Image 1 (tube, rainbow, N blue to C red):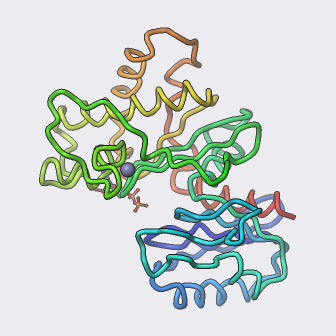
Image 2 (image 1 turned 180 degrees about the horizontal axis):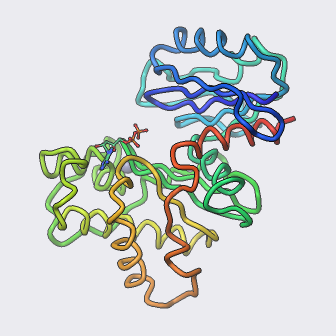
Length: 284
Ligand code: ADP
Ligand code: ZN
């Protein structure tokens, strides 16, 4: 059996599957303190014989195998979780191989194997929700370097009609600071989901996201870009983003047909947990 943990800032999704990735059981537990949360994690996995566990975690996390803090959640704004030895805690309890990467790299892996990017060798997954985070799988491997990508914090050109200063605690008006759900809420004084009918909101949102997608395309050339997260439930964003992306790219490089290139997740909200199961499979 394979075990998986999609460790998010608000909830942990725990699952076990057979070797063909069919989920046998899954539960969701709130992310509270590490002690409390790990207790729930152990309660769940103690009931199964798993051969490996795949973890896709919120971060920042340490993914560098040469580092003394490999497997830790590092400098997260969720202070109770700062410097948490995630892999260490799991290894103390279960003597099995552990796969470890970011939640968004895991989601990209899930989409590549069972979702919108099946049959491809590469894809990028961007979530636009409470924050903006991106992961990618390139040639079948999650994208990592000295650390992991932080695609939500790239700089973007400002929309000429946008006076909002941005709310990233590190950069103010980076992509996340201008385009994540809380930025929309602060700009207009209303939750993003209550602004569905307001055309300008989504035009500005698409303006920022298209710029980010242009950068990712020019740097990584992924075969698919998958956009998930709460804000992307506004499906009218997809055509707006494609249109702005085409305008910015100006035919400079040939991309896949944009209707097949910039797309929603095929696994909907299961991309992450599926990717974690695949990580476990790869770790065996
Ligand atoms: P998280 O990022 O915490 O995992 P979500 O992806 O659901 O969770 O992101 C939450 C953010 O997405 C909030 O800022 C919320 O306003 C926004 N959001 C959630 N649902 C929608 C929706 N249907 N339309 C627009 N924005 C939404
Ligand atoms: Zn930032």
